[in-house]
Length: 468
Image 1 (cartoon, rainbow, N blue to C red):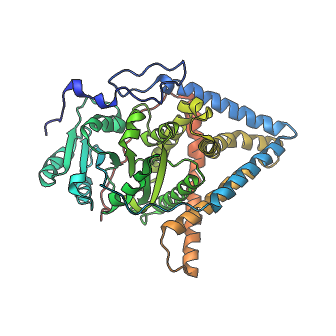
Image 2 (tube, rainbow, N blue to C red):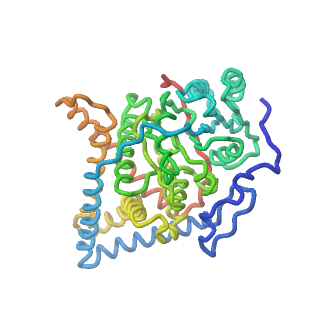
Image 3 (cartoon, helix red, strand yellow):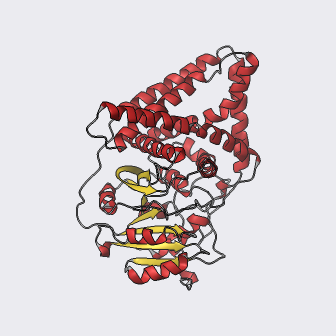
């Protein structure tokens, strides 16, 4: 299939200049090169920053174990987190808008695909059959130089589906998924840009359900709930099902108290205006969704979360595949704190969002980093780990959130005694599964302190055995 192209002098004009967000960052940052999708030099020096954080957390944890009043500081921190957790749990999330006023927004649906012959046909059929006016949405598949039958299949599919557009990237193209999305963006027409993975299974009414949420002018993006299509396969996929339910619950609760909504890649919808103001997708990160999340909030946009309908995706089925995927997620999540720390601490997002983000950074990254020296000091001094109270609170919150998330997303009606037993067993299994994050987080933060940054787009292999 011949490669799609457009005049060089027209490339990325829509994205010049790249955004006001970085116009006043810091003196150490260089200007963005016109006509490119490279972002400022704040993405350099991550290893040095990670090493500094690791040193501070380790030395701080050891110091807390040595001073007599260290336990009181830990109890104080536990109290603060406990109050925040209570507010989080007892806040009711707001309902989603069901109707839209006026004309439906034009939506561009994008999928970056590389060697996806197993799923590409079902994906295109699914996306080109959505219950949305055909003149109001388009589907773009960016073939990132696939070496399997993906190009051939797309050629056949393009003849069948009128709204399907295909962009074939050259072997010299860079930037991975972010680069693919940036390359196609100037060719799209949508007021809303939707991004799905190649294994996505999208509900027919997905676009109709998402579009009303953008009626609120401050909403820059919407993330729909992710669900695991092959959840029944084994322990790992069942654990991912519980993890996604927990994640959606936490997203909805955080948004309800004025905290951060976050993008999750598959099933993300972004307002074009917001995307362009933030400079498109960052090609200097391995998790474009988490990076864009921070930039949207720093630019004063909100992100909503939609629980129904969910986008189905394949869960990884082995421990090794899970390890590689979660390490990438953890590294990308940590990168955003290292990249935007001064903007975050400068309270550009507002007090509620900044507070919410810092507390979750503490739970997700700082505590796992601190766990190693805390355990070593406990062994040396023959006493329980000093951080036990705050760790116990974190685990308790995880259990409660997972139970509530499974109940909220499982549609268990009517509720019977057997239902509660099922929810409890799913929560216990999910909690056991989630323990892998402690190892992932601590190893990732340590590795980033001593090894060069990784920008490789690691693609999850899709089997295509679970499409319905």
